[in-house]
Image (cartoon, rainbow, N blue to C red; front, top):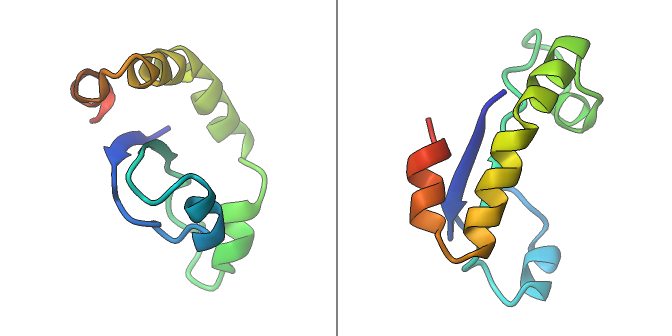
Length: 88
């Protein structure tokens, strides 16, 4: 399961009103990749908003310790360290 830590990447397709409530776009975030659609005609919204396949659920739960550690580093003001440690 791919996740990526970044800072100030604009909305990245997110709802602008939710971003505005955070005081702007300048905040760190952990993005979790859902991978490519299983076939070209698959509806993108259904893929992104749907449930993870069982293999992806396992891959995600296997990464929970890394996600937690990355989030703790970010909350401690160590964004650069989180990025260098956990970005692939």
